[in-house]
Length: 97
Image 1 (spheres, rainbow, N blue to C red):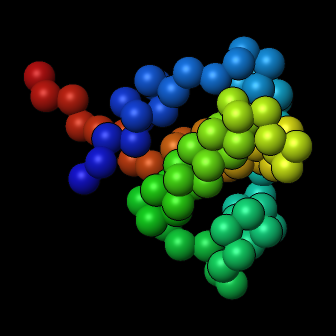
Image 2 (cartoon, rainbow, N blue to C red):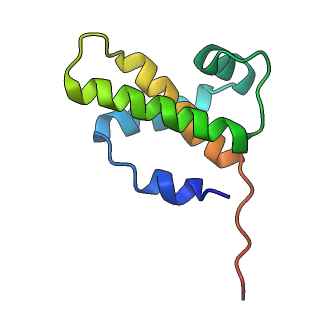
């Protein structure tokens, strides 16, 4: 199983993007937002949703870095909101004593 927590902890993005995403997490609704972002009828579990969101975020980051005019700041923030929110839905790993 992929360690999504470590993967996202290593994510380096502009501070303003991350702050905006954290602020937007309060309004996140899986059924509405994943339907729009991932074009799926009903949301799958976070384990299946996170890889798709990570791929989409990497695509948006590449467009941002390239300075492409098709870059959408709003979409990038929405994907980051979904990524962070879905990560919170994953069960916490068991810590061995």
